[in-house]
Image (tube, rainbow, N blue to C red):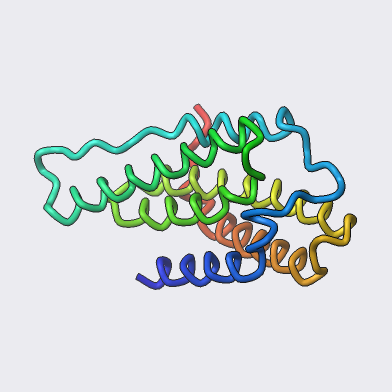
Length: 169
């Protein structure tokens, strides 16, 4: 439950700090080209829904259904970004919610770690985007610092959970 609360606070902070950037403003300098984000978007678009199994408790079935809905929302955001209809920033909240929902599905530690790695990759891209925004004087230095702080928090979590990382064959 604490992990869910942590992500909700991070989501709320992101919405408060980046509302214009995430929803409406176009930076004066160009954001990374779509092909630079292509691999990340491909990974996000390739995430699979979770199927409920007969042995799942009712709460677990609902958790998987909620995860699958969050995955559909993320897929819609990925489609918008791929077509240039929205900046990469719109995926920040969607992906944080997806990770929060994953925690309640009974997913194994390796799957949670894989999602954490993808979250770190997303935030690295967003930090690069925030740097471009700072150069264009659209973003405040505080916004860039907030993105870097979020990235450091995710990297700490990644190091703390490295034992759960999938092992190479």
